[in-house]
Amino acid sequence: MLRVEDISVITAVHHPVRRRIFDYLLLYGTSQVTALSRALDIQVGSVSHHLRMLERAGVVERAPDETGDRRTSWWRLARRGFSWSADDFADSPGDALLAREAERQGIRAQIDRLQRWHRTRTQPRYADFDAFNTETLGWATPEELNELSRMLRETLDTWRDGIDTDDGQQRVPVFFFSHAFPTQP
Image (cartoon, rainbow, N blue to C red; front, top):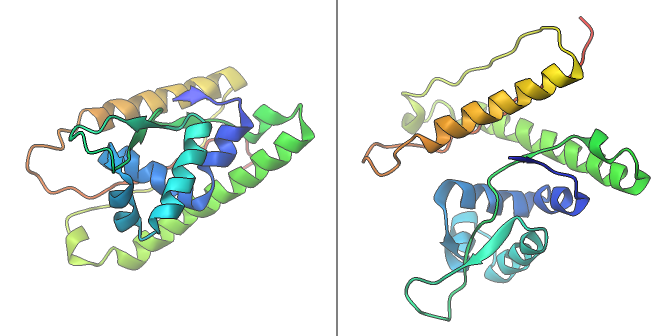
């Protein structure tokens, strides 16, 4: 993950439909527009529109069609993650406003996922899964908090990239989110 400084990337990814497309490509890899449309239950034209918006922001890119069939459009991620803060845009009032709204949308999406989990966790397909909540308090300078963020991203990337999804085991998508920020007890 890279520190993002361009507000167009932040606003592109934090649109609800585009976030779902990003998440799908992150989990399933290179996909056709029609596969995205079916999986996300979104019309093909809408998926194509949102892919072009993500492409302009440098988030996705067109992928070669291995079959040679030029009637289909294949897409893949150009980057796998983001790390940013609304404070990154403090020098521009307009960008700061957009960043704060994207931050609010992101938090709403995280809470929505957590609530969906609580509604569906008793389904048989989740019987063997134990979700967890991790939280703590500590002391940190700005540099130490940045280092914690880097270490967590590195750990999560190592964990995710180390899973062999072709080993025949049954897996479900797993969402992890964490926030670290200054606070008062």
